[in-house]
Amino acid sequence: MKAHTFHGPGQSGHEETPDPGVKGDAAEEAPRGDLGRRIAGRRNELGLTRRETAQRAGMAPSYLRYLEEHPAAAPDRGALLRLAGVLGTTVPDLAGGHVDLPPGRGRAAHSVEFTELTERECRDLLGTHGVGRLAVTTPSGPLVVPVNYGVVDGAIVFRTADGTTPAQASGHQVAFEVDRVDDDLSQGWSVLVRGPAHDVTDPDEARRLAERVYSAPWAGGRRDLWIRIEADAVTGRRITV
Image 1 (cartoon, one colour):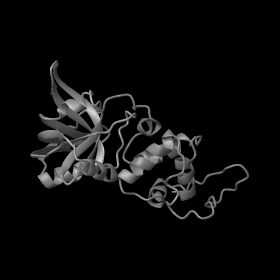
Image 2 (cartoon, helix red, strand yellow):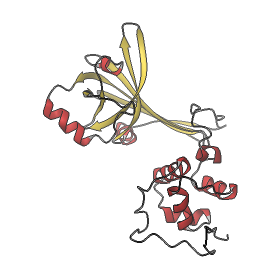
Image 3 (tube, helix red, strand yellow):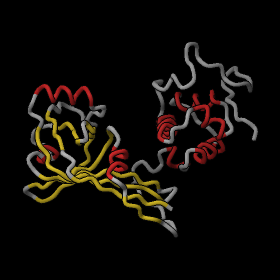
Image 4 (cartoon, helix red, strand yellow):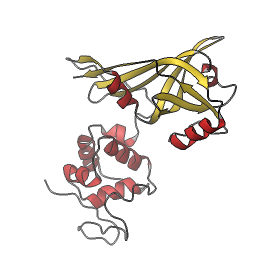
């Protein structure tokens, strides 16, 4: 397959010369547009380097770097199709066409297998941080809300503010769910954590959580109340074709 190279202003068909002082994937923090973030995010999720991804897609690593780091990058459809194939996704997903749609809209595969996950597998899928769904009981009935969470010493922790729905979890048994659905491959997994939730009242412990938890609340604003969910029960299932 002929390699695809970037022809920028004043450039020949040769591979773009890297910026001085930048080696390999070291420029991961450069500003990106939505397309670039999705490409880089999916690539990192699969554990692929930029060079590996570019080689599989038949393009120069410098061109892939350009796509990831330049907000105005507008690759042709052929390049997007190759990238989508390598990254196991679709062009609309890379372009953000499904960003406002719920996952799971794809057709179920003809032959699927449900697998019960071990507790170790569930904890690995929870990772160190992410976004999950918190189910709490309120005076008006049960509510489910998304929260940015972290995992510290095996417990689910998140930061919120007094008077919010997530704050009502304190002092109660709650459920916390995280999942991933891949419409293109008709597969996915879900992990459910159940246990008591309580406020973190010790200032030293609150500071320790602030230092160790990567995710900051997407909702923004002042959110100084830490909630900790003890994972008494951790279960999960995986769907594969």
